[in-house]
Image (cartoon, rainbow, N blue to C red; front, side, top):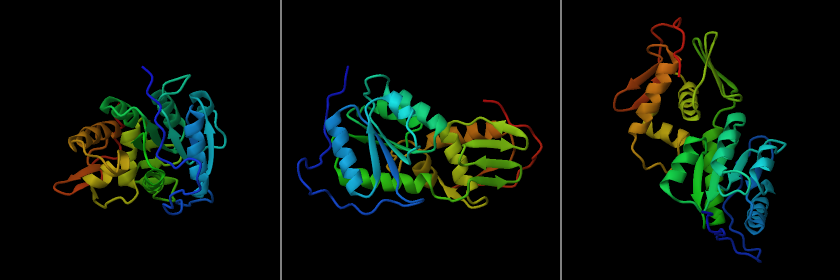
Length: 256
């Protein structure tokens, strides 16, 4: 069943756009790709983003989104696209890009949210929504996904390449899920510092995460198993997690 078309709460036909603050600037103007097949909604979003200081372009389907050049800093992704499901587009984008992905859709069921977030979406916004909220979410997501300038993080035999999202332990490359990578990156930014459970949940899931925190323990267990280095990811009871001094740097990483 196709989701009903719901327009964002943006005042059409007027210049009264909300002033929600400047974009987060890293390397000049931030590029936003709007993936939306409804031309009216796409136009409203593009115009609103441009007035807020972003460089924005809209495409109507998944194929054009995946072929987009240059690579955007942020992707606003509708799920109800004409040529492919938006969740599949999200998965394929995340596999090749570190752009922030915010799903903007009329599909508000929990199953849709979980599917998109598990496939790499950084945030999920259900229509209708206000432009001010969208801009605030873009800024928040950019703060989470681009908190460090380093492209490569190292701790002993562990190497985390933030740009390519590749992880190696010694000479062995380790295949991680998007969530596992985000958790490891949060820990590797400052090895030895205790990162709270809430910090990790906000970075790897959503700043508005209200689900059970035990989901983090499941991903931590999987991360430890794949890294295959005893003592590397430490639990600091009552506080959070940190990268510690490995008991054995020479052990090969575990499989999936």
